[in-house]
Amino acid sequence: MPESGKVVKNILESVSRLFQEVHNMQSSFQARILSLEQTIALVVRGNNHKKMLDEGRLNDLEQGLAATTEFILDLTQDLQRQRYEHNPQSLSEVLQHVGTPIVAGSSNKRWVANRNAHLPLLFGVSALYAPGEGPVEQANIFYLWGYGGASQHRLKILAAARGKPLFLIEDGFLKSILTRGIDADPRFHSGVCFTVDDLAFHFDATRPSRLECMLNSSSLSVSPEEKQRARELIGKIVRNKLTKYNHQPFEVPQIGRPGCKKVLVIDQAYNDYSIIKGMANDQTFADMLQSAITENPEADILVKTHPDTLAASGRQESYFTKIRQQGNVFPITFPCNPYSLLEMVDCVYVVSSQLGFEALLAGKEVHVFGLPFYAGWGATRDRQKTARRTRTRTVEEIFYITYVLYSIYVHPERKARCSIEDAIDYLLDLREEYYHETPQVLPTRV
Image (cartoon, rainbow, N blue to C red; front, side, top):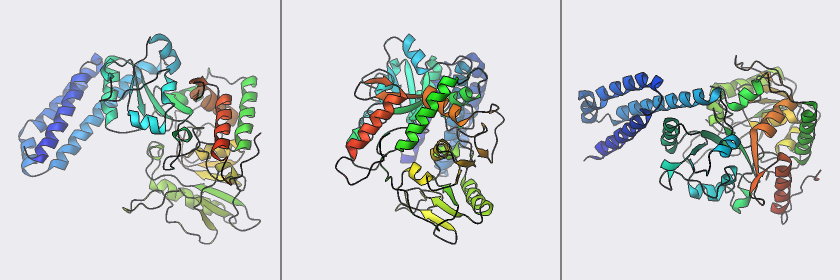
């Protein structure tokens, strides 16, 4: 069989498997799915299919089937949301009733071992299974790590078709010492903080996540005691300069003109899902930079570029990769701890970066051009709105709900979940260990 024919055959077999499992879902979806299947049949079994192959239009056929697959996956996600939107199931609740957890997800064993060795602690298991690595068919809990990836399609279908809980997991806001790309002991890469959601990833503003529902809930109040705990935690995080990755230099940079107001503009990785799903694009970043310049004519505009530069292929790695110093615009192209950087600025312009929320924790005025989790609650100056977010929240409330109630922490030495306070102490100990034999000056631990 020609190579193009093999590719098409594989695609069709994959779509066929999807249909077979989708048909097991609730009857309310049957009509739409059958109609879709009949449409595909006209394409892949009729003359159109043969004509596409004869004319070498393999890309057209692949694109059509890819769109079809995405449509099916949207249906399954809708079903999952309907199932849990009014009957929330936290991971803790599921683990209480599931018996012996058999956990299947999109992360293979090698990735878990090298980048997130503590992930199994979330589920209280010693091993996680990915397609092709274990008893995925017998799983009673499913998870997806990050957004996208071919291995996720089958897991979404399996979870929805069998009525099993599916959790969307990402790195948390106080993750680890190192980011990827730095060669070191996996302990310094593995995260101790995770976000776990049963509706959508927290950065996905196209639909309500569990975090958004919590922040928006009229019944979820933060007590005076909880607000005090939030203030103490925020103070400890800011004073110790703890962030998602904790390997950047701590010295406050000297940049710009002495005595001038400083405005920070934050760059991000190009086409990151937090941007795509945060209702932003290239134009959003261009508008943000122009607004910062126009609205602050006497200030220094400090553009914190993404640490990556142009790849060998010429692919753009961030939105302000090519920016150069000109007039009152100063690029910051060197690594720097976010809180050290925030010490020298007066206000911050951001699309969807976590640094925008950290600026709120540091007491800065924050202008937001996308729709990250912390926008729309009255704590930021927003350039976009979403009608879903109707409640007003203080920074302390957003922090407590996001960092304390929503996020999950694990303690690698205890091999169990832990409080945010214990996770902070663990990260501080680990950071001191990492820098023990380096000339890096750590902030005074308080």
